[in-house]
Length: 249
Image (tube, rainbow, N blue to C red):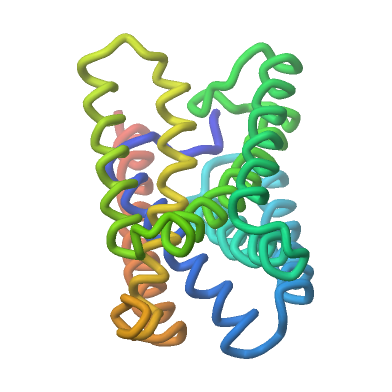
């Protein structure tokens, strides 16, 4: 039995919420609490490895556990991207190109090693490791892309979010009106939802002078966490009901 969720509209809503929370929570640790990008990355990567180990040891799909791993990849991706782009001085463009190359290489290695890039039929430990490694890289890439759109492209936070939102709408149309592989569309959408979340996170936290709504990292993180927890609990309840109905039948 697959340990991954069914890809539905609620999945994408939670994905965007988790990646936006990852942006605000990562900034909260690294900047608001002044821990720094390097130390924050070490702390959040350690958290990711702990949740990933629990996920790998699990024998079935657990919504709370799955989204905990997603959230840790998002927060770790935020601080790792900032460390590369700012602390190492690579800049958003170079950082994005490096991460894009890493993502393509990881997908190619996954395809070569397992013969598939399916996200609905991941059952072996090897496939699961590729799945989570790809997600970690894609979330890190998404942060760099989001920062590039917001700071370097001239679009600003709202403009960057509008651009990514439009691209996501095109992907939805492609799913229903084209013959493009659903696996390809999934990974493109998965990457794009991260910069969408990153720009939305910046829009929520940054000051009015910088084009943001000035909710702050703490306030934004608490609001997003409440929304995400509510959606995950709803998913958990729905998943439990489906299993109960299956037993009754």
